[in-house]
Image 1 (cartoon, rainbow, N blue to C red):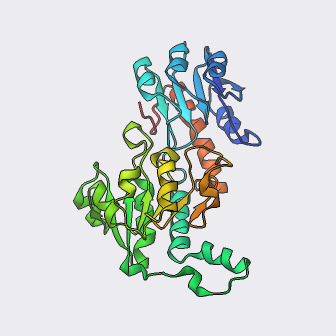
Image 2 (tube, rainbow, N blue to C red):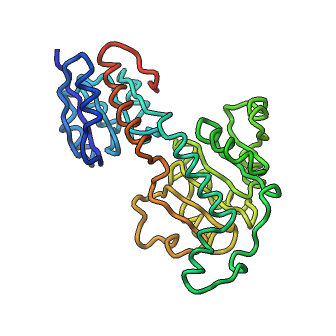
Length: 319
């Protein structure tokens, strides 16, 4: 028996790692590559597929209801917001991700953004290159042990970030309704409610998944509750922050700054006011990346499919 695996879309130069996993699978796999951008394109290519390997193409309810043979959908990444999980569950299709591939990379990137803001490295660099050799351009800067780092979410990545931040002397607080105060205390973190963390944080690092309940979690109302010196760091998903409200808050001095690896629209719109703000650092959704993480992601995403089609269980199944 031969299984058809459809790669809905990809941005890699080649597919060597995926092909290697499929070749070593011990089952016959017909690997079909596409570059779908719309629901209709996915539907056209995927009707008779036994499995989907997905990057950014929409795997919506319409797509899932059109699948005749599909047993598993595996996504490159941690987030699965491209896939309708409820529809997949109803259809009996396993959805799997790769939740552990970029833990070090994303927590390191969040730390880099935090430290760049805490010592205003990017701001000072820009000032010097414009001819302004004056430390007063970064006033004020405060000692780390006088400030609080708050994290939203307390899964793998924020826990890793906390372990890296802790030796620097920051006070630590976290919001996660699914993690106990005792568990956080063991990690040296004070458990707080959402609005408490928002009000206490000098640096607020976002690590929650993008779901219905977290869409625009950081909105105008919550931005207005933050300290005027506060900085938001987002390495999770762009739409967790109401970007228009954030731009207004930054322009009006409601908060001091932002460091964003993700945005509501990617690539960033050329007319985005964030691009012209000195108090904003933007990186191009690159927090996940290292050469090692890239290989791990691609192999594990392909392995999810092999395991299910071989009749085994994948440890990364979400449905």
